[in-house]
Length: 135
Image: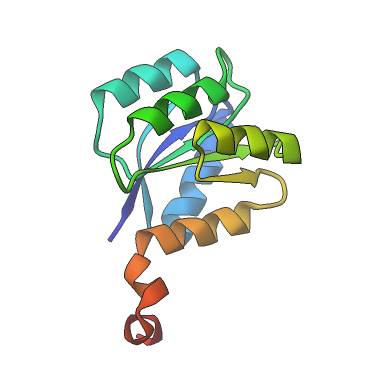
């Protein structure tokens, strides 16, 4: 089963590479993207069919923190909000958790951890079912 991701990232190169990596390695399908806070808020208000929102903090316009806060408040059960940033300090991680983020990953050092997180979310039965995990 593919996991549907909405990606908020202002760098076209990073966004493209992230989508390719997640589609290839983590059973993730990108269902939408945005470069700004305004674009992401508009898309999320009109689209409920997503499983994972991946949000950068520093956007071309606006703040990813505002996106995280709004999405975390309005999401449906089972939807996850994660932050992917070059500024994943301890303070930033704490603030993101306070706003409702489920996880925070550093772009430069934690892409593999992000892929692992997405795999676990996309296949929750494998994580808890020893028979499925052995298959």
